Image (cartoon, rainbow, N blue to C red):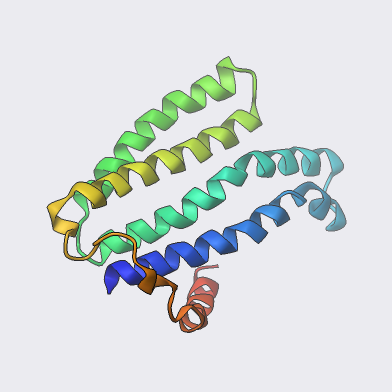
Length: 161
């Protein structure tokens, strides 16, 4: 059931990421409405737009991290985070300094790092014998009882916010 619940969470967060990404597209305008400096609002809006791909990766990444935490599997997460961090330093340097993208490159580097970390954890879950009993592949059962899941997920997410 752990794998089923994780898949359900991935589905729900993936769907929630769609409207969140649309809202992020208007970050600059929203900041202006709240009285922020126009120049800062424009730059923040541009940064948010370039961060949009990270929304989808971050939601899925959190699901996989929680999946592994419930099984007390810490080493793969530390290894994945360490590898991602080292790659992030290089990618960030290239995208910010060398490419001339500036803050857009920083946002893109963050998005790439989330996707790399997600890929590494997914690879571990797929190949590791320690996850064989809890992750048996994607199941249609994850599509069942989504409303009950959302009833619990909304208050839980509110506590984190």
